[in-house]
Each structure stands twice: as structure tokens, then as C-alpha cells.
Length: 217
Length: 98
Image (cartoon, rainbow over all chains, first blue to last red; front, side, top):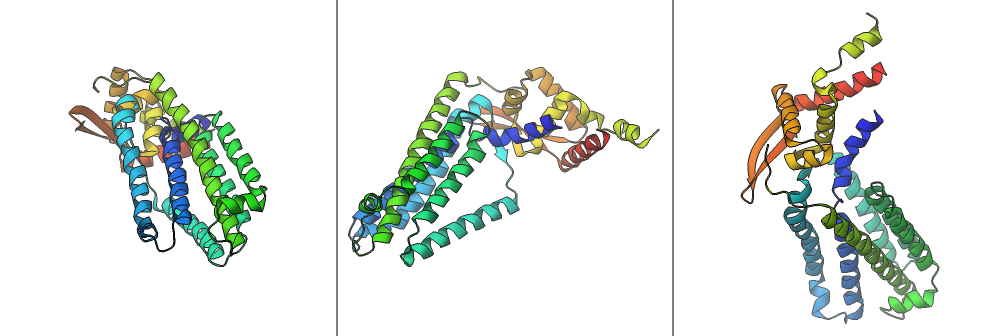
């Protein structure tokens, strides 16, 4: 029965067989970091503040269609096409959790709380999600997950002055600057780690698979 | 015949064959997949896989659709509702028998 259970899990692991799951996550983290940095560094009345939402939407499109294009051109001709089931309850739970986290961070951000601890906890949760999705299939990816968790602790214990300097938006709000610095640094570290891990997976995938000449039955 | 032996005797023989069990279990977890994916995951050759799929199609467990992806033929496979029910029943019976 365990073997049947592992067969049922194989399609889930297949999604990241080419490392595209991690590369998509990496583009998301680094893209958010870039958007956040631009928002912090540009003056409040600059046009960038008004059109930043388009940058966010553009990033989402890039991740969605970029991943789709790579899968269509590289993965499907080599190891086959899979369309996943999308049960409503799973999507609803994921959406609710994301919304709760976003609302929690937004409230703390507005009220100028010292929310760096919450940001670090979110980082640990992100590392756990990466472990669940990517590292269960390949053991060496636990090194990446471990590095993410260690980086989260290191960032959490960095001096407030360092984090504040990174997120220096306004000297009047040191807590806010510390939170922004924590988020920015975390996104950059996670994005880089996922880029390395996904890049290695893609390289190994391309090395060990060949495009199928023509399918037949 | 005692209950346990009856449960074993009632196992769905179409699904019980190891090759077909692999195919059904893989398709159960997805909406649909193509022939190449199943071939890659099960490590079966085209002939064997094709013969198992024909048997599953005859039983009404798998729906086979022939299509094209960028001018290359593609065979899409999907577990039917009766195939899903049969697999769930098979797992239940097997658990009970063991």
C-alpha cells in the first residue's frame, strides 16, 4: 500500500523535475525584492509609486507564462505532459493562508509595529513550504531548505542598525525601516538560494533527458 | 468462504495487474497526462503500455484522446469517473484484505 501511496505522490514531485518550480519562486522573490527596493528608494511623488502595481502584475505574468513556455518547449517533449487536479478546498486554504499573512504584515506595517519577528516567522514558514514541495523528492534539496532556515535566523539576529540602513525609507520610523530591511534581505537570500537549487535541477534535467523524437502508441 | 477470502476474491482484476495498477495510480493523482509521461514514469515500452491502456479503456476506466501538440501527435489519458471509483474501491478492498 505504501508503494501505491508513493505512486500517488509522484505527479506532485514531477512539477519540479526540471527545477522550474524553484526558478519560478526565485523570480518571484528577487522580483519582489527589486520592486520593494524601487519603492523604497524612489521619492513618494515619483511616477514609480503610481505604476508599481503594474510592475507586480507584470511579474506575476512573467512567472506564469514564462514557466508555461519553458515547460511546453523543454519539459513536455522530454518527459511528458501532466495537467494537475485543482481541488477547490486546497486552493481555498492556500488563498486564505496567504491573505491572512498579507493582512497581518500590512496591519503591522501601517501601525509601525516591530514586525521583524513576524517577518522571520513568515520566512521560516516559506522554508517549510519549500521543504514540503521540493525537498521531499530530492534529499540534497534539504541543504537548501536548511540554508534558508539558517539565513532566516541570521537575518533575525542582525543588528537593527544594519537592517534599518537597508530599509531606510524614513529616519522617523526606525521599526518600519527594520521591517523593510528584514523583508528585503530575506527575499534576496531566498531568491538566490532557489535560483541556485532550481538552476542545478534544470542543468541535471537537461543533461539526463533527451527530447522524444515523436510520440507514438 | 470467509469474509477475508471473499474480499481478496473480489479485488478488481483489471486494476490488480501491477502494470495497470501503476498506470491507474499515476492517473488518479492528475487531471490528465500524456503517453510519454506514463512511459517515463512506469519505464514500460510503448507496446506494453499501449496494451495495458487498451485493456483499461475496454473496462471504461481510462479515456484516451488523440490530439496534436505543435504538429506532433499527442495521446492524452484521463481516468474516467468509474475508473476513479474502481481505484478507490480497489484500495479499500486491498486494505481490508491485508
